[in-house]
Length: 192
Picture 1 (tube, rainbow, N blue to C red):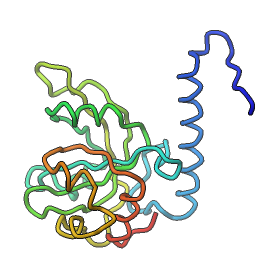
Picture 2 (picture 1 turned 180 degrees about the vertical axis):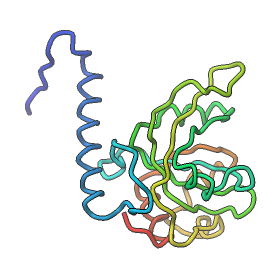
Picture 3 (picture 1 turned 30 degrees about the horizontal axis):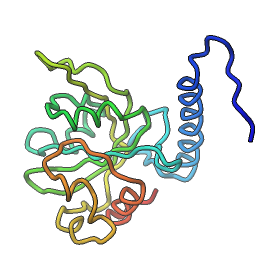
Picture 4 (picture 1 turned 135 degrees about the vertical axis):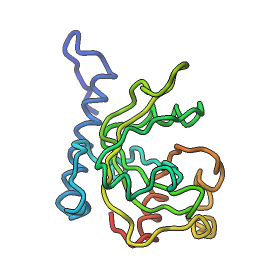
């Protein structure tokens, strides 16, 4: 096994691992771009890659469509995901990396997964926070699901029974593993 030698003052192992992760993101993104994963109707703004093909992170964010729907998101083409005031959800925002893929879920009315987004900018201080240590990320829409995936379908699907959406339904930002992400896409009529 070959050891990675680091130049002096390079930031050590952490910098080397980030460089390696960025390289994997670029490779995975290129593969998905070439495969037609991204719809031409949604310009790709994320220059990182969807990370789950190399075992990285996928997410789900929840939003009430009366306040901010998938259609609003698509029309704006980019949004700062602000206003999260739950520590676990905040920590999930902080774990997001540029290029990570995100399922967009309509909570309240509808209760369904409706689209796929991408993290365009990693966590930064939430500009809407008047006090406390809160974070936000920037998201861009990638594509809608051909058919929305209702919460009832998620709960009934054996492959999704352990999904955080089922187990911890009050959390507004949550991790999704690669198998769950792929299954949701399949149920929604989308391909990876």
